[in-house]
Length: 322
Image (cartoon, rainbow, N blue to C red; front, side, top):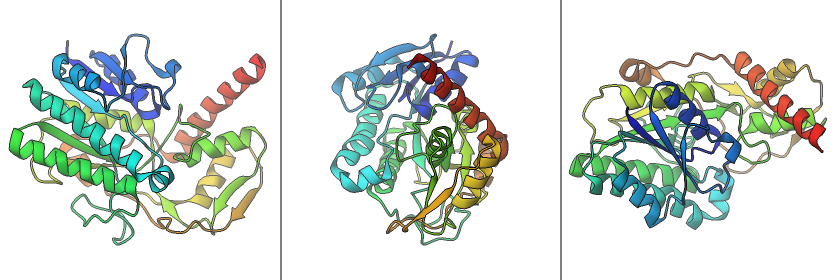
């Protein structure tokens, strides 16, 4: 039975990845420090290892675990938090990643290391979407800079130490289990506000666009990256894959689509534009289709219905329990 470690496996995306790997016959271990993850997200059949990914203990887990694949989803995910505290962001997203990939190197085991990067924040506003993997990269935030730095380290480890590395560059991921109280997921935030009867806040005129990809499609991308034969790694973009839809959706269009899915008519309130916010973002997925045989399956309207249904059920459970 192949063995997998999912860091951040109690979190939004990581728990879906762990679920899918279990479905496909993997022996799955989840490593999480529960800074933002939820214990209820950890699959019952997964082995839980409560560690901080920056710790020597986490490195020891990787070094001694003889995992066939490490899906590294543990991260600091809030762009605005990275701006407020870039030192903390770098300590988690650069040093935490380096801690684990160095442990893979030291293990001597043929482990494929799959890094969760960003397609939304990596390329910046200096290229015209849809962004292709080998476009110039000029991130606008410490979060994007840290993800790019980690990818450069992975390319180094692939070239010099022959570590089997892959980087998946996610667009804007949404779906069940996302945190509705954080800053990283507008769909979850909007769902929560609809359920509590609050207006949806849109910054600026709402014309800024994002590429919204459903979390279960992202989990499928991790499975594909774990199992496909791939070209030799080594150059920065050689094993980097955009994971999105290639479709730009404005924030206003998203708000209207979610209102329709929810059968809601809460008002939309417009707030002042946020300085430095990226105006357009979408990624080309041609490379993932060609080399990973991966394409998104869930259209936005279907994904929004499933996502709102999840939050509505949880809201009702919590209401009845209070």
